[in-house]
Image (cartoon, rainbow, N blue to C red; front, top):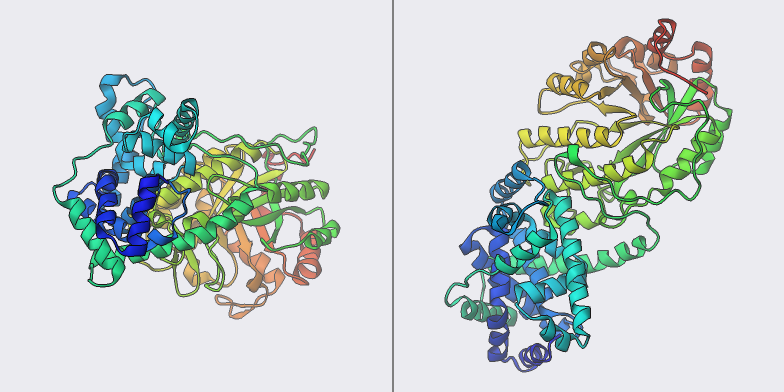
Length: 603
């Protein structure tokens, strides 16, 4: 920290010097106000954000470490403040503008800075705030505070060339972050924007008012109203973020992968480099990834151990493959850092058994007693919507659900699948993927609308299919507040099939079952039997389920290409295995084979 800033903060903390604190506020109000105005797009809201930011500083002044760069710290804090203040209408307007206008600016020239600024501005501060600390400090100090490389070299005690390297590194990382948010921009245009567009005229008297309000709120001698409330929320958020950062750093040391750069239009998605697996999965000589392997699959949930795989060593040949669940937060332990070793290990196990692997990424937990399956970095970032406990997820009566209508959630989801596709799309032993069910809990908060929810499901489906063009993709359908028949038609147009529960839910799924037969000759379809279905009551038949009844229901209701059986014992080994050994593949699969359909090549 600059020695003068350090001395002023010490005077404020130890002696209550309002003059010292006011000097700090006056020096940094321009930086904070400009960032807030770019983020919020409203001058009055930006002034409120400035007051909240300096309230946070006043309350945390005694805890800031000497190595903290105050300008960068204030910039990060005002970004968090704005995240709390921004309302759904403002978010929608900003993000829809970017989504509609997102384009490659690489060929732009200096005369096009104005048009480039219109695209970059809504996401600039979000991208800056997400940079590594040293990269953010360099850009904030040089461009937003206007310090020269010579001044920064003297302040930081390094060579001037080192400062330039940090700035160039920051520009490169900023371009990556903007690309991940939907805007591609050349380094030259980005430099021009940072140099010419990041300073806003500060309203007269704002610094004095902010200093007075912050000092009063910190001392507890006056009520600061909404600004103090926001400051309290942000202070708690920063404390929780510090705890999560420790866990994220620990996870990042063992994770593989890198940052993805995917725009909302996943047609133009580019995948990050993903390291080769530690145990490469070799392909059998005659297997073509374009050929499918429909039939019976066993479901092994996210918590299954290698012992469950060993039980499959005695499974019949009619069990074609294994479906595994993976939690999103386990695959992305830190933002943009991916660890696919669990999938690679299961792919190797499946190959050793002569089975295909089917995967489903879980992002909504089944119980409020558990943490959400969204990545931990979302939990402390209000930009992802959701509850204040776990941003990116909202609380229903029984579970944590994903805010799939949130555009930033969609970007992160698309990034994940771009990385997965780059690594696994050409793996011959990977058969397909399930998109988790359409049903969502009730909410009218966090920017939710039915139209945005429908669009979120389509963005999600496209992200998966475009990342895995050579694989089967099925959307699990149950209920939704939008027209599922229309959605199924749209899915079929993208080459995506439908999947449904097949046991005991006739009334709830009555509108869904006909969709399987309508599209079964155009796209694959599937049925799934979950853990509880082996002994629950079949409502339509008014009797307790048995495995033969379940199989008959699946044929009668959906006639699937793929039938997934939960790996519950002893049902799987003692009832499912003998039944499928005796009866063979599902009837639809047998019919396609007898008709000469090229659906399988086992090598």
